[in-house]
Length: 140
Image (cartoon, rainbow, N blue to C red):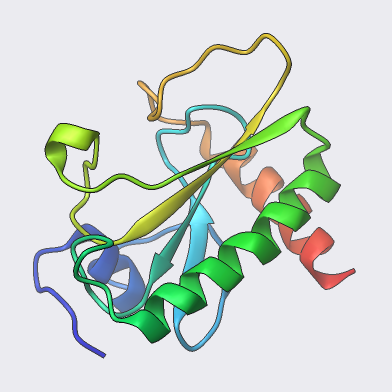
């Protein structure tokens, strides 16, 4: 598994930077976005470092896609949003802020208006509660 020394997501994978984890397997890691666009905003990342969709190896891409679907189902069950925004950005001009392939899962409520990324840090205790609810739904 390749890694980038200075990539924040690679540091999270190595345990050098803390994260509020939702789930993890051999190829992927899901954790709560610390600057959520809304309650329940989670990120699914590949454990193998690749900057974007154009660079990620197919097996890693497929693993992220499987995990995204699994976590999205759990978010739907746990938080019962009106919809889910699933987003993936490639390059700074497209809104990618961390150059490590990742997918955003953002629960949405009818009438909710939000950007692709949150503007302020989320409450860590609330993020932990939401992560636990999603984890519980994964286990059902």
